[in-house]
Length: 143
Ligand code: DQA
Image (cartoon, rainbow, N blue to C red; front, side):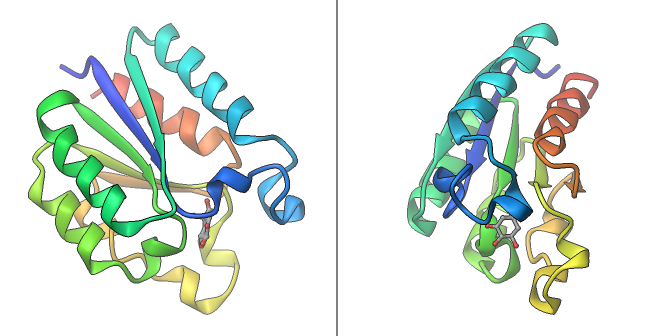
């Protein structure tokens, strides 16, 4: 049973609200995080949130998550499309991992339509704005 979840935001997501608002919206990561925590609490889940612009830091966090958390939600940002190291880290840990994207990655640049982490995640949610994260919280809660 899933009780404790980790949310990982990858590179450039710290700039939410300022960064390409036409694509990612005008709300900050702080607003997103507090909404995620509220949604998790409402589903009876404990939730920690981590953001890093660094591939190795994300991998270290995934490794430590395997003993501390029951599930992971990850928006790996652009690493989604080419980081075999993050893919391998997700494959190495046994807890379920859900891939999320704010934008619809299939409706944008060609390179974004490929996810190297998708095949090792339990499922993927893309294109619903911040709601993508809330849907992932619900999916973990119901697992
Ligand atoms: C993103 C989509 C990626 O292609 C992009 O590099 C991001 C954000 C999203 O949430 O829509 O940084 O993961």
